Image 1: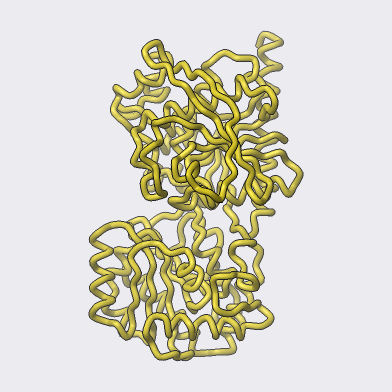
Image 2: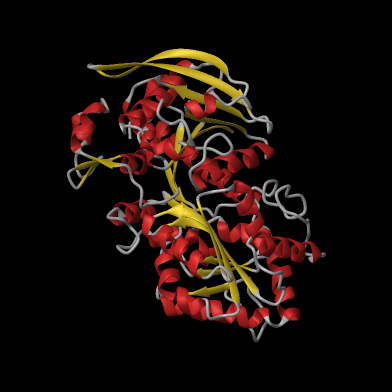
Length: 492
């Protein structure tokens, strides 16, 4: 299949969160399975000015958004070392995005332009035409709308798929912005893109795509409920009833996250030979200013510091957690209140807490490899990559049973010796503490702990499994388009 993958970020070109990891890994996995996958994202200055990429001008096109707003788009092309072709959509709208932390500080009209420019690109770039346009999160939500509303022969046979990576971020803006889209006014209704008096980009993607999915089966069910549905649960239930909503679990890039070859860690290791993991732990303890101690459980946390990630639970139990025979090493940035809290913990408990506020890719790799356990007590979690990476590195996850965490982590059963982590259900500080205490207790039993580590490392969380599920999703979307054409031709 010919697949155009549209996103606002993609590793290694530009990264804010998990979407970039998916955009960097899933197309590679699909390509290995024989599909012609290409990506399209904004031409951020941070990409255009990066000497690593050999970027070539491709074409320039007019982008008529509405009578009073005519744009001119410059399209570029580059080829990654993996041979993936990436198209870049250039405009002054993205000039402020000079680094990853500034990607989403642009004017929302930038994404109207981005979506409309992709429609223009498909209409005019006749050298290569996609069969599938795979849109991701709200920044691409208007692409399926334009492909269905605008009249062009190239759009008639294209199927669209929309992936929700996090329903909490929907691209909701004041109603006045709808007038800038150039879309017909009858679409700004409760049955269309109107959302409690405002414009909702993601709702457009949900309504106009042939298939919608999210990034884990459990999250696909959760978002149909008021607790997780972010006021779109009714629409999502309707899509599910129509057979248009599903959940496909993310994978991890096993070339980047591989303890046998990882260039960022001090020693390599495998499930068959764990001696290197002990070296990684020793080096991590030394880097934190601690005496190496193999008997003390080292707990890692690599996360955005937000309520979604369960940081309020950790904060509430910090004092009690530090009474356990553990050390805590943290890397993250986010809510200033959490940043202050962990800086203060670091200052007051240097023998047990090491906190780095910010992001450092090499340090993240060292935490995943050197820690014994990984904290991820999320309030909600569409999929989560941290727990999958930690499993790969034999670092046992301690998670809340929600979303993708529920789909990937099975609570350890001491009677049967089964499971790959420690999970709790109630969103309460005491529930988190109990799970951590159970993990620390098992850690003292070196034989059972090693068996747990080896079992975790031998599981397959690669993208190949997920890529097969996306193939089936694309096929369903294409079949829908064929059936729609058949009904239109037969006058039904």
